[in-house]
Amino acid sequence: MIEDATTKVSAPPLTATPTRHRRYALTMLFLIYMLNFVDRQIVNILAEPIKRELGLADWQLGSLTGLSFALFYAALALPIARWAERANRARIVALSAIIWSLFTALCGIAQNFAQLFLARVGVGVGEAGCTPASQSLITDYTSREKRASALAFFSMGIPAGSLVGMMVGGLIADQLGWRASFALVGVPGIILGLLAFFTLPEPRKSAFAAKEVQTTPPLRDALRELGRNRTYICLTIAMVAMSFGTYSNLGFLGSHYLRNHAEGLVTLAAAVNDLTGLQLGATGFLGTALGLIIGLFGAAGTWLGGWVTDRAVRHNLNAYATIPAVAALCMPFALLATYLTSNTLAALCLLSLPMMLQSIYYGPIFATVQSLVRPRSRATATAIFLFFANLIGLGLGPLSVGLLSDFLAPSLGSGDAIRWALISTAVVFIVAAAAFLAARKSIHQDIVS
Image 1 (spheres, one colour):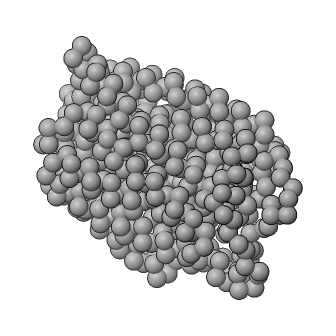
Image 2 (cartoon, helix red, strand yellow):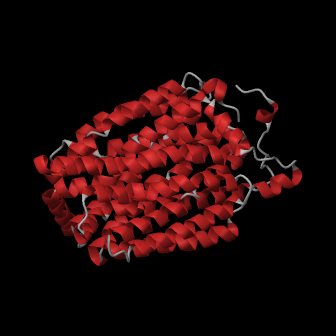
C-alpha cells in the first residue's frame, strides 16, 4: 500500500446529509443510468429494419452499435471527469442526460448511414459525462463496506435500460417503425435531466463547508498513481475483455435470432397473440423477449454479484476479483449452448444464463476501482478505466463481429455467419477471467480508500 501523506486524504464524511437525500440521489442516478442504456442499446433491436431500409452491411451495423458511440465517448470521458473532480457533479450528469437524449431523438430523422453515424456520435458525446461523475457521487455517499452493493444497484441500470430499450424499441418499431422508436425514447431523458439539474444533491457542498477543501491532484500525478497500481491495470484488462464480449453479443443478438430463428419467432409471436389478444410481429415479440431476458437476468446477476461480494470481502478482499473470474470462466459454455441450439424457445431460455453471468462483475469491479485511488481521483480513475473499456470493448467489439460475419457470409450464409462470429467472442471471456485472477495477487496492498 502507498503510505505517503497524500494517500491518507479521506473523503469528507456525509453524515450531515439526510438519509432520504442519499436514497433520492441513488434512485435518480439509477434512473439516469437506465436511460443511458435505453438510448445506447435501442439500436440493437432496430438493427435489422435499419439494415433493410438503409442498405447497410454488418460492419456498418457494428459501427453504429459500437464505434460511432465509443470514439467520442472515450475521448471526452477523461476531460469531463477532470472537470467533475472540481465542479458540480450532479449538474454534469444532468446536462449529459439532456444532450444524449436529444441526439437519440435525432437518430430518427437520419436518411443515410453517415447521418445516423453522426447522430450516434452525439449520443456518445452526451453519455461521456454520466458514469465517472455518477460513480464518484455514489462513492461519496457510501462506506466501503457497502460500496459494491451501492454500485451494483447503480449498475442495474444496464440490464434495466437494455430491457426497456429492447422491449419499447421493438414494440414501437412494430407499430410505427424504427424512426419513431428513436424519437420517442429520447423524450424521458430530457425530462429526467431537467429534474436532476434542479434537484439532484451534490454532497461536496455541505461537506466541504465544514472541512478543509481538498485539492484535486494534477492529471500527471493521477496517471502516475494509476500506472503503478498493478490491481488497477489487471482490472482494466479484465474490463476491456468483458466489454468486448458483452457488447459484441448485445449488438447482434437481435440479428442472430431474426436470421436463425425467423420461423420460430413468428410461431411464438402467434402463440402469444392468441393467448393475450396482442398483435405482435416477430420484431415486437423478439424485442419484448430479449428485453425481459436481458433485463431480469442481467439485474439478477448484477444484484447477486454485489450482494455476494459485499459479504465475501468481510473475510477476504480477494473476493472482489474471484467472484467475477468464476462468472467469466462459465461464459464460453453458456454462449455455446445458446447459439448452437436450433429450437427457438430453448435458445431464448438458454440466453438467460450468459445474461446473468456477464453482469455479475459490475458491482465488484467498480467498487474495487473506486477503492484503489484517493477520493479526489475517483472520477478520473473511472474515466481512464472506461476509456479503454469503451474504445476497445465497445468500439471494436461489435465492429469486429460485423466484419467477421461479412467475411463468413458468402460461404456460410448470413445466419450461420453471425452465429459463428458471435461464438468466436467466447475466447475474450477466458482472457477476462485470467486478468481477474491476476488482480488477486496485489489487491490487498493496492486498496487505499
